[in-house]
Length: 290
Image (cartoon, rainbow, N blue to C red; front, side):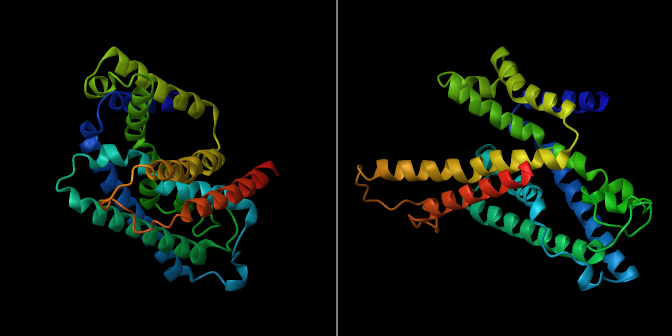
């Protein structure tokens, strides 16, 4: 309870402000995350160099029952598009936005794949708890380094860094709620600290604090939030909006080219993504219900 309170007070303080007001916090988080990931990579390479790779026969290629956690974690890692407008609006010149997002996303994916492969070959088939290093892969991967003095403190702080961007998400949700419920005055309340701003900040933050107080299994929570909510945000709603508004735009007969047109603009793609989403929902539900 005290830890949740210690998390709630500073995050709520930032949640009643603007995204731009948390620039310093975001910079510190970014540097800390990079340092932690480097430590994880070094730890995996140390295990490979000192103890050798795990034999291929001991490595399990795929575990179907773990699909909800995998899918939830992947969506959680890359689900940032809902905060893109607030983050990118102050960037100048705006023409640098596209290469910046493409480069950041590509580099992140490459680092994730590299760390996953190193983890599999360093710890994949090992047994035992993490009182000794190396050990079996733990539900929270940072726990694999508990036995390494110094490094254990750094990498076990990483879950806290995943919570640190919470104010940005809370601000985005707060602003979206205001635009939905009070569209005429939303801009004023988004740019100023008012009673209305405070009330909508409570609406976006308090449910999260309540869930955090009662739920202890983080990976199971990710399976629901990433698997269902994340899939709806990243695939179902965007595809539905594209399909509906493309039909509406056909009646306007635009002649000018759209400068923001996606290079992947095949009209069949939204339907393919919706079909894949339906398949993923079935797989997630099946595994969670087992």
